[in-house]
Length: 155
Length: 133
Image 1 (tube, each protein chain N blue to C red):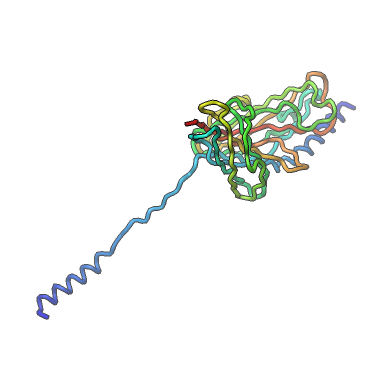
Image 2: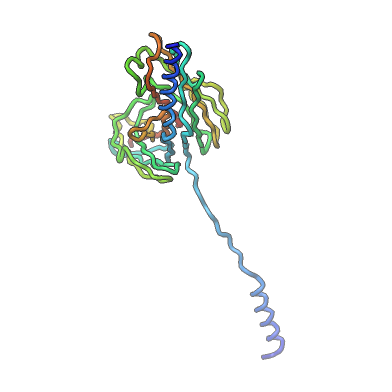
């Protein structure tokens, strides 16, 4: 092989080794619009001194708490009070009216909103605190075990 | 004296009941929005309820209209148990009832286990619009 040709061949080979190939590897993913509710704790109803009100805000009571994860701001939340106790002693459900209030902190902020009024959720984690009050119009609540369900809806 | 005793009895009883409330269910669901075109008298939606907890939960899938009135629908399975982190497909078939379009809510609702009390019921609802072609 002639000397100029040999040099040219060597240059070509070295040039090929120097230009290392680079390609982009693409990763894709989809986050579906979704809302997730996690009940952190149920509430506790305390009795008023005259036994005509059972409420999470009375002495010994505490609000229920939940965490809501919203993937975007297209969702809203409500906390609807029940029409009656799911369990109560005899006469415990007579003449009773319920009211639920909720407050939100974190991604969404709201203070003591009527449970049936929807609040728009912001994307992210929202902490919800729910208060429930049962008022008896025809006298005192009889002694016994009471349980009532508040429905938190995210839609 | 007797009134004070009664207050303590009621408060203690309710505290005992509410201490069990931590077992209430929660869930998420996908998809939560959708538009469906159907060539028949009914339309079908497949939703995926998911259990975000580390313990199993029971959930039910229910269908409501725009005013949260129950809608007649075929849902299977309608009541399911989901293991920790598990998701399962649920198929919902709703009739148009003679209308050209129908808006429904498909909701995943928590079901307390037997012998458990719950104070907060979680309900995650998707909104769906179906049109008959």
